[in-house]
Image (cartoon, rainbow, N blue to C red; front, side):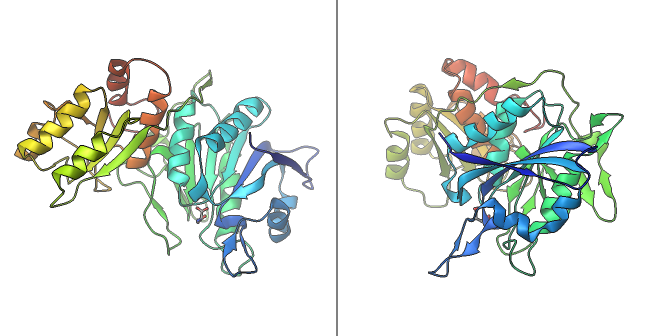
Length: 354
Ligand code: ASP
């Protein structure tokens, strides 16, 4: 159970607001400050409000739910996803949009997880954060937050423009389950190689309407996950004992295998046999590429031809972040393995091309 505090932001025009937003502050560099030992550590939300006085002059009703103990997102866990998801589900009818302030390190995982948990959206859920804390002069926090707020409140003909879980960062709005953190020391921290930007912000915010999901009429909330999954990255000279011990971990139920290029792996018999034995034991193995762009195509090369025979499934153009969270989500539904194998290769909320 996550403990939290509610902060009602009194905005100057709150009597007749253009829209109402729920902001969920989970932590991350965004609100961090240097502690006595000189390391960056998460700080509470009051510190944030002091640094963005403009928040109070917006024509919006804003409520902030702040984790009592903000987290560095390297410590993010399923119980945090459940807390964020529940805050949104419980308040879904009360607000026009949602902004989640989150550390950048695992933002793409959380955005993917939330996209599976909250399907059938008609309102925006925008995750954002910062590379430099809000208290520093050159911080990107202010712009990221204020633009995320603008996007989360944007409507056309009374309807939200973005009925999706997204990441807004450094002028780009990306579909959450297509985004990846690709840079740690540049403001442009996120990219979505396999799907176009949903919007770009400059003087105006230009929405890429053809790429935005259609809104739905019924929210479908589900927060069951099973964390018994692992990530297996192929590299040259990988040893047989590594495969053997990896795939024989007793609790293991699902593996995302990061292969080369368009889905290639070594095709030595011992390699393929280990994969086959694992899938025969009921472990779901999903093949995604180590490349950020492009997709897995089993059989394009000789070196991926036999993966189907080993029971390995193609993750197409899914990101590793989407693949891991989708696997956790499907395994969490307590259905049989054939059901998981069938669903994992089908797009459910824009996370892969059909
Ligand atoms: N370690 C931080 C986090 O993910 C990094 C950041 O927010 O940029 O919480």
